[in-house]
Image (cartoon, rainbow, N blue to C red):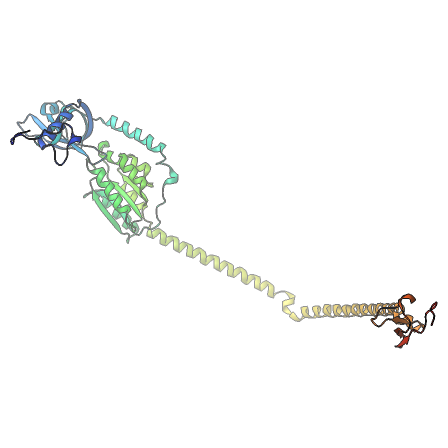
Length: 420
C-alpha cells in the first residue's frame, strides 16, 4: 500500500491516459521533443515572408511559407550561412534549405534549425511552371470548348488588382472611355510576394459569388519572372477554371504568359486591352445603330418604289383602262356554259324518263297482278298461306280467293277421290 506522499505511476503510452490518470504538460512536451528528435535532417522548399537579422547576433530568424497554401514554419539559421549566399536574401524569395526539426519544450513550438540555404533559380522555377502547364493541359483546363463567352454589356465588372497600381487605372479609364456608365466592383490585393496567391483567390471567390458581377478581370502591371510567379500558381489556376463567372487575364505585357492566361476565358495582352475588351464601344455601337437604321430606311424606300412601279404597270393595262370589257367577256362565257349545261340536263332527264317508262312496262308485265288479270286467282288459307297442293286443303275449309279485282271466300265442298 502506497504512503500518503506517493503518487500513482503515470501511464507509459499516450493511449493509456485518461481523465483520472493524465500526463503533465512537461511529459507530453518531452515525448513530442523525443519524437521530433528522431526525424532526419531534410531539405525543404518555401518562400521567405519574414526575415529578422539583428546586428551583432550570430543567429537570424525567418518564416518559411508554402507558396500554395497558408502554412508556414519558423526557421533559425546561422548568419554566416546567409552571408555565404551569392545574393542577399530578401523577403518573397524562393529558397531551399537543409534543416533539422527541433521542438522547444519551454515554448511548445516547432522550429527548423537550418544548416544550409540556397535560392531557387529562375530557370528551375520556369521548368516547374512548364511541367505544371503540361499537367494542366492534359487535364483539359486550357481547352477552348470549356471557356465561357464574355457578356456583351456586363451589369458590373469585378476587378482584382494591386493596391495603388497603374493596372487599376488602365482598366477603369479605358473601359469608361468606351462605355461611360460601366460600374466596377474593385478588390485591391497583393499581386506579388507571399500573400499574393491567397489574396487573389479570396477576391476571385468573393466576386464570383456575387450575382450582379458578370465578368471578372485579374490585372497587374509588368514585372520580373519572380514577380509574376503567383499567377502561375496551381491553386490559383484551378480556382479560375472552377469560377462560374467569365474571367479575363490581364497580367503584365504581351510577352508575359503566366498560366493564368491559358486558363482564363479571355487573355488580354495588357490591362489597357482588358479595359477595352470587357465593354463595347458606345460610339461604335451608336454608329452601328445609325448605319443599320439608314440601311433599313433605304431598303424600305426601295421596296416602296418597286411596288409603286408595279402598281403603275398594272393600271396601264387595257383591262384596267376599261374594266367592264373583262366582265363582258366573262359574261358571254358564263351564258354559253349555262346554255350548254341546261341542254345537257334536259337530255339527261329525257333519257331517264324513257328508261323509267321501259322499266315500268317490264314490271307491269312481270307483276302478279298482270297474271290475275289474265283470269288466274290466288287461293290462301285463313293464316295467309298460299294453297299449293290439293292435299293441303280439307272439306268444308273456308279459303280466301284473290282475283284481279278483289277477293272472296269459298268453302271446299269436295275433293277428288273423297266420298261425301
